[in-house]
Length: 510
Ligand code: TNX
Image 1 (cartoon, helix red, strand yellow):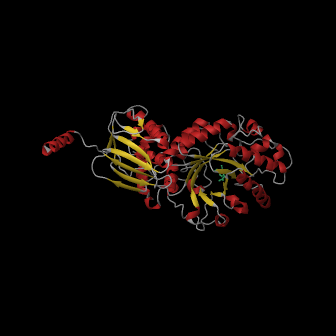
Image 2: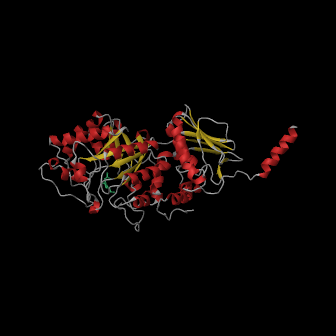
């Protein structure tokens, strides 16, 4: 009888094609920390596959199902438990923060993490292990097979960010949601919104209503095109949308420079009380709040309080860059009063690296945008307990042109082709700052030349992925030829997803 049964099994398995995956376990962006492929069949998704999850894992399972249903046409119900062939999402202790373990075999898939954020990261990996047609919005007739084996993965840095400048050109909530969707694919977990600058003010502040009535009016922004601002409801909705994708919104109000739009709306924010003219050019460094005036600190406190009230995330960014019209002593006076206000409203102060010149920046997060290999003021702040987010302009600025021929973008920090964005080590950028003080990396996208999502796509992709890999993957995984191959293979996903990425000549796009 035993022999007869095994004969039947052999015949049955010989009559169906092997479940051969088309993607290897390591073909993931950003690179996974550890992958152990297993010989034999992978897991085949069918119309009978179910996703199991309970409690806090259920919403993440819902996101997975939403991602896989359109391309497969399968129902993929999310259920509490089942004996059926399943993709199981399990929350359990013992995994690192945001880390996960993914086991794939012919009988099923198990994704384990300690927190829902870890499951979500694992879901992004799982999506990339299916063929690119999975990105289609209509059912594709093909086999859907995941490669067999185990992935154990966790981020190198806690902070992996992107920044979008809404001030120079406003971007509608729908465009921001679209960017959030793309960012979440690559395990980016912070979106920094640059909400005010010389050309415009983009977030409603109830106690200073003219900020948006004037500073967000039509015609505000570079070139005088567009205009607009986020209402408080828009902002809260974006915070929620981002949180569903395990992304924290970091709001920035830039002070004491970059304030021309605020001063046009409220001339009392200048020292002579005279309103400056609205600005639609791209110059920087000419505006400053009046450091000796009390109204300046009422303004700063009101803005910080209202922003803190609608921001659940831990950080509040107060700019501080390029204050070329604020004398050094005044700059220090200003930061001494303003940085503690961020703490007063329960947030961790965050600013561009110029704030490190102020002793009040102790314990703040410092965003380094320079190029130097050492920065004495940043090192001093680090010694006083500050942590650093790295955004070197000549590596991570997504608004820099790729090369001489790039339409749009700027070039003051140099051209940044994909390899330039990829080939650096966050642990070694600042020789006088220990790696333990590096909170992570961020890729800023300033919007002087950006009008719409097409412009965002073209400058952000593929370079954003290079920064995402530097932030997520262990240094041992850093490898240009591997990155280049994985990026080339990702092209068809972006095409299906309608993302107009730069076809970098450094990459063989498949
Ligand atoms: C510098 S870097 C700026 C921004 C500009 C950007 C353009 C930094 C903190 N400030 O005001 O938009 O260059 O690349």
